[in-house]
Image 1 (cartoon, rainbow, N blue to C red):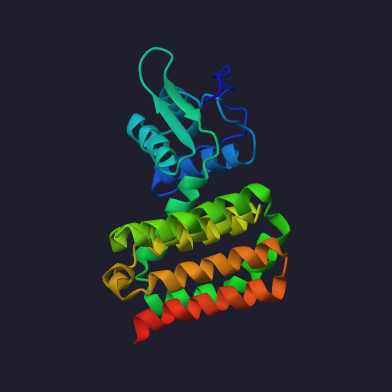
Image 2 (tube, helix red, strand yellow):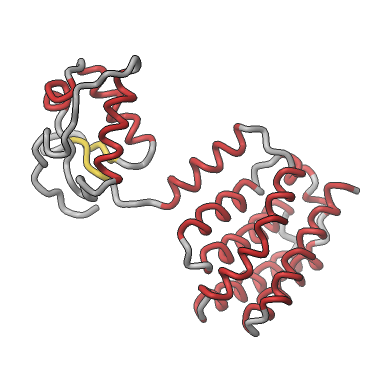
Length: 246
């Protein structure tokens, strides 16, 4: 974490007294906007609880709950002890991925929903990864493919083979170089390891075939062949779909 700077004045972002029925949500919302709007930067200390109480006209319990909400969202880190307090956290993609994954899983996403979304988004992914991927990304993808074949040959359990398969797709998402696409696709990929049907059907995977499809995708990416990569990504989804529909 970056060294803490001096606390900004409690009234610097132009806060107003809280007026919402759930006061802590109002306080958290105003602080969130101040953080996301750049009025507080990573490492800045937020106003103390007494300052929040005075600024927003709320109780200590409300001020504390507002800070806890921001901490749960990954926007704030709370430190205890002398010199402690609530500090603006460094941006962390994992918090975004987890929040989106939680939302999708809580919504009761099915395998059908999951694969339909992937089919709709895969052409955009192919275009983005062709633009953003560099030599380092290709190296990571090739290493993953090699590790996948080796793990299967050595008799690794299905859970490990699924982890390697999902890791391949997460590398693809990261290689787009687009933080919005990366967040969306990474959340989808990680959720692939959580949808119950994916785990229960893992024994029906033809792992060598799926890993060979990964290898072909890497080759198309290395050749910068957009049409072939798109076709391979969609064909791969058909392979996965067949596992759960037959």
